[in-house]
Amino acid sequence: MSKIGYARVSTRDQNLERQIEQLNDAGVVKIFQEKISGKDTDRPELKKMLAYIRDDDEVVITSLDRLGRSSNDLTDLIEKIRATGATLNILNLPSFAGIEDPNLRNLMTNIIVELYKYIAQEERETIRERQRQGIDIAKAQGRYAGKQREYGPNVKNRANRRVYNEAKRMLQEKQQGSKITMRAIARSLDIAPGTLYRIKGYIAEEETANAQG
Image 1 (tube, rainbow, N blue to C red):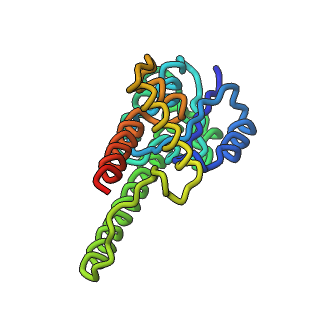
Image 2 (cartoon, rainbow, N blue to C red):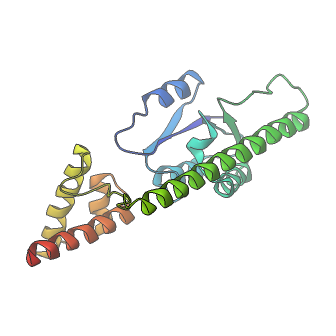
């Protein structure tokens, strides 16, 4: 049996060290790690981890939200892990390792996980509702400017400005005949392909505005 870790943070600016330290302390021998949103399961390192694990392996995560954010995604991922014959160990949830009966141990673990998923989903829905109410109030007061872009030439985040400018340079080289693919550009910038296509749209808007100005 091998202990396989999965660590995730949502943005490039966040640090993985704390999770990795906890996973190492738990005896993990291999860690899959990435800086990407948990809004869905389309994550490169997560897919690699699911393809890597084998029967009797133990998948270790620091908390369930590192694996996913929605109840449906979590249910699907947990089932995929169990289908390989591996087990899931969530470090911030109660451990039932002292219960000798494996059926009872699994039952107790499942109850805790389902309860956590329910609470996480409720919190998520509450946050969404508060955001919607805040937007409605801001619109009524004429203060709502819409969702702020994460990437652009003038965004506050310096790292994201660099990503935008480098993407712009590489996309221009591609237009001039470079054989590099969009996926390769995204990989070199450490962003998802979908993010690169979104940046490409921003660049087109910027160029249109400059031409009109």
